[in-house]
Length: 88
Image 1 (cartoon, rainbow, N blue to C red):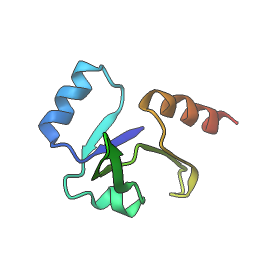
Image 2: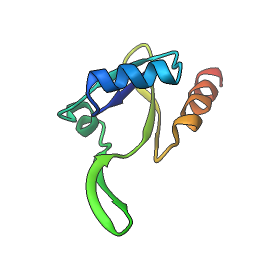
Image 3: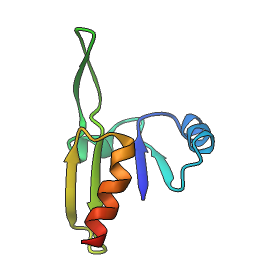
Image 4: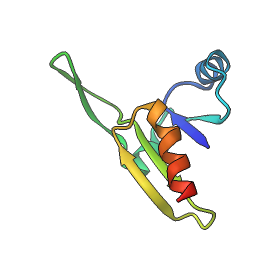
């Protein structure tokens, strides 16, 4: 499992350690990966619009094929969804 975020590498390392995450977090400050997967987009909060990551989840098989894609998924749901996809 790999997580991708536009946050700087140092911040991601601290976040991973603080939350004891068992997977790698990659920094995507220019959002090239996010844009490729279509998850960099307009968000709204408190009536204001801004660009950011639309939390999403992808399961990619050993051949590089996307076998599951979910948009607007919470981080806690993502692991359960991945396990379900991989075990069915």
